[in-house]
Length: 105
Image (cartoon, rainbow, N blue to C red; front, side, top):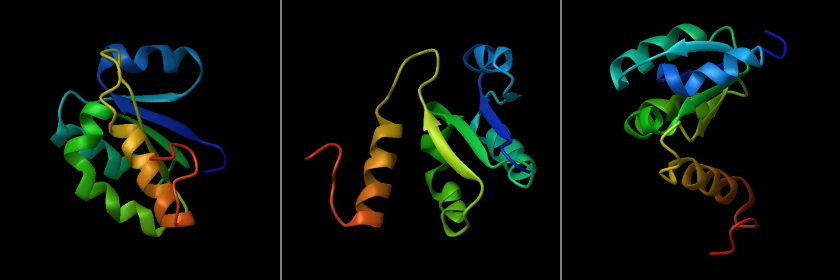
């Protein structure tokens, strides 16, 4: 599993990652993303998930918080950022550190 990285998202958003050598998995909706995530979570240390898919899967993704791997990161898609990834990062920092050191809000 050492250093393996994957991305799950719509076809257009993940295409550039394939060119960079990242394993890509297309998912056109929440159900498909959940299915793919269950399969790839065993084999990858870092999994990027586009914000449009990550947001409806928020509760499902909490199960991965208890283990060191995989680390699941929400990233913007080709449509741009919804702010969901930033909110997840802020929340994780506040849980870990007890204070917001990046956003100061």
